[in-house]
Image (cartoon, rainbow, N blue to C red; front, side, top):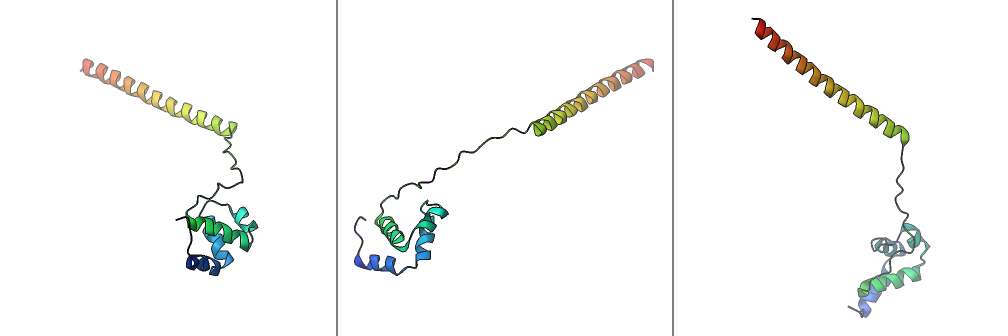
Length: 109
């Protein structure tokens, strides 16, 4: 739909600037970009969107996610893992000793 009817253009022009800006936010523009648009710019973008023309990608670069390493947190995780395995190994040793005691007790009877 490359050509807009006159009625459609009039409908766009009747919309308030804040309504046009809220519609432009749904097309991928950031708040900062939309806030910097005046009414004429909003109308131009709205007409392009109504024609079905792909709007350009937002011009503000997206900052990449930064991965941080928290040495203290990793230290705490390591301590918890070591404690967990110590508990598991102690439990295995206790079970083995109990089994051996039972075997000895059964043999004595």
